[in-house]
Image 1 (cartoon, rainbow, N blue to C red):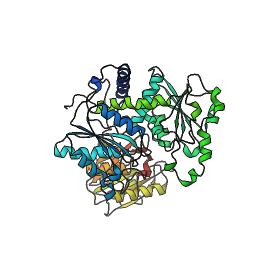
Image 2: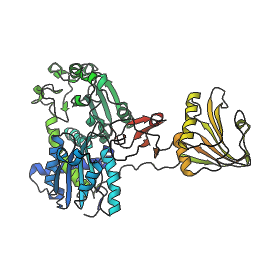
Image 3: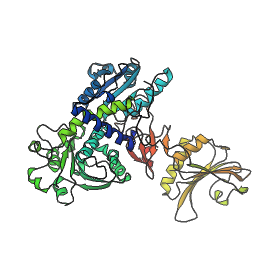
Image 4: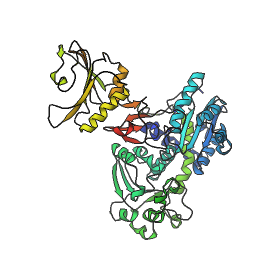
Length: 527
């Protein structure tokens, strides 16, 4: 099937793999499909009907609703369905996931892999590794759809949730006031809402969870970055007492299987804080609806069964909508739908530019006297100045040592911590007489290791070139960095050679490309 639209071949590893306009296109087409399906109209315009397209369901964690809704969605399309059974596969012989997927990919002309894994970032890693393999052998790249990866994201659940919210609001996307209730720490469906709620133009998010179950800071920060108003309460009772309550309540179950023993010991206390009670019915705003990604706990549900037959029940319709949205998602990435999509593709990754600036040398600047105070003067060589300027002396010394190790500067030289023009501030200086030139790649490494420093190339005691280094948009290809999430696909031994890769988000924070964990700049380094 030739590529005819920008959605064909798109991997859906995270919500942001579709732009806001592309997500709205998905909801519009899902609405059209649901209306046609309900009325018994012709469904041919939505059907892929390609017997050479192989779709693999690879669920390495248990699932009922997601797996079955995808199975039915695939069957609708008249394509080749393959259900991968991990329990009887070569995983038991310690075969790598990459090798398994590579083998399955080789059996068909075109492939879509729908993945659920405990490990986080798998779909992104497979998109890269299997994509490169496909390029080498001259085949179409396969598509990967994330059906839930650990605590990271569940984008297809998020798409069906947003579709359901819009449907319940008569397709008005101007505003939503939503309460997220329950296990916000481990609930990946909630984590996906940090980006998915951008489908609405104005968003208020009320986080309702006890301290041990609160939303990780990285997702809360992302919500705030996206312009959401975010508020927090420790439980439903406290939330109801606030007097300003949302009309959309989204519950999640307590994922005890992902919690430590100390938290599990407090199960009853935690459940009580986020379980709705009958006595609160009269305190809810008019037209309130409850939603839940399901399943509910059979014995201790956070949405008790006495609510099943009430007007609050939005979760049954929400569950059904998984079929309609997943039919459309498959049609989009297979190229059946998407040629009429409006808007632009997702924002491309920021390119590596503008963080290395060559400072014009208007005259033959002599090496300044301050390079002589307590440090060996340089006649010919390199001086790295303004290292960790304004930081504490011990932090500056750490930065100097980091630069030496990363750039392998096992050469003659002197270095130290000195006052700036402001006697209250400090900075680091390195004097390197044996380093007569520095390559563009070394400048990039230095910018990553010590943003804010300057590099002076000295010849005959004059500054011949000067570079000012800013914080780079990405940091990767360093043996000295790592994601601090032990469930990340980049964790040593977790996958097959996925090197850490971070992109800058806000200020001096960097987010893992694979699992989405946000780190402070200093935390990504192992030095």
